[in-house]
Image (cartoon, rainbow, N blue to C red; front, side, top):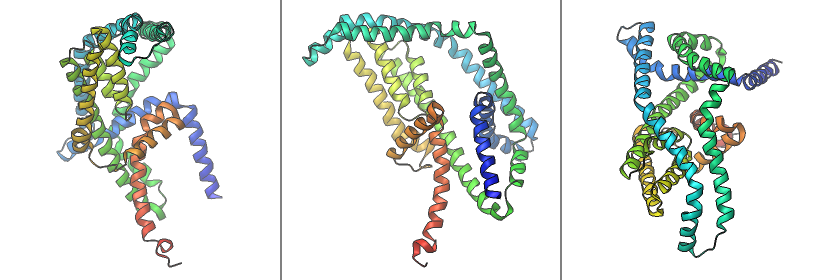
Length: 346
């Protein structure tokens, strides 16, 4: 009966989580911020700075860095966003007048320029319209704007209180652990926490390094929307392969509209190729390391499975969840290799 009771509670919690997911989003983001900031506040505690003062100091520093970055990048991002929308609007005409004839001449394949350009133009116009009027739509929706503003305000407020009371929350959770299984659960939790923290920190640094690498490389080859595309590609690189694919598509389109030459697109491909080499040989080994130990095929499977099961949120959470599962599976493997079943003693 106890097992059925706990199973019913888990099902109820899962159902409530799905139903309340829009409301829980700022709480989840705040918990992630508190989780990432806890080691720094704990370090300050060791140097005789109280938990409340340490939390305040960490939040002030983070907010100053974030606000300074936004103030510095906002004018550039705004200008390049409008420029990219303009490129999208010009894309249809250039596709029919230049790109299709160039591809046909290079490959010897006769293409129906009317059908291809109509399809590409219609989709480009839809995307340009969506980007161009996105801000206006957001502003016209009072309730949606109010909800978004409240969520933005709630995240740092909730994060502050969670970070300040993080040790107390862990103690409360620890008190609920069944005493019979407490040593094993604590061991698994420590290992999962070590792997997850190392992965999240490293991945955030990889995102920052890739964004800077793409932005600098695209600026060197003369792309006018380099910072915007580099920033987007760096952020989306949290999902494996999504950042490089989206970055190549956006940068290639912008570069071709800007120059009108297919040869210029090759420079874009070179920039992202170098970025991928740096990611695999420098950024990931030094910033993340072999903390997950997953084969690339397993990474692709985890991302695809997460997207199929839980949509875009699944894509974002696929690797962090996999990191925790790998830590747990390593203990299961150790137990299995020592079990009587594996050793044939039963």
